[in-house]
Image 1 (tube, rainbow, N blue to C red):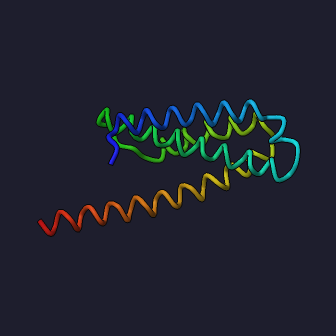
Image 2 (image 1 turned 90 degrees about the vertical axis):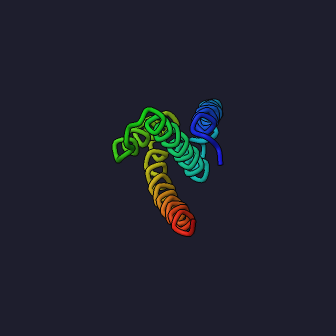
Amino acid sequence: MAGVGTSMLGSVLLFTVVLSLQEVYRGKLASSELHTILGGFTSSLLFLFSLTFIGNLQESSGMKSGWGAVVFAEIIALVAASTVHRVCITTCFLFSAGLLYEMSKISGYMLGRAESKSKRH
C-alpha cells in the first residue's frame, strides 16, 4: 500500500492534471449534453482526488477526518464544475455521491479485512 505522503502527492498531481484538462477543454465539454455529463464526471474525479488529499493531510497531522472534509472537497469540485457548465454542477454532485458511497463500501471492507487479520495473529 502507498504511504500517506505518496498518496497525497499522487492525488495533488492527478487533481492538477484533471483540472487543467477540464479547463483546456471547457468549450468542448459544454458543447453537447453528453459532453456536459462527462464534464460533471471529471469534476467528480476532482472531488475524489481532493478528498484523498484532505483525508491524508488530516491523517498525517493527527486530526480525525469527518464530514467536514467531504463537504469541503465537494465544494471544490462543484466550483470547478461551475466553470464548465451549470448542468455539470448537478451531474458532478450525483457522480460524487456515487463515488462517496463506493469509497465508503471499500473502506468498510478494507477495515474489516484488516481487523480480521489482526484477530488471527
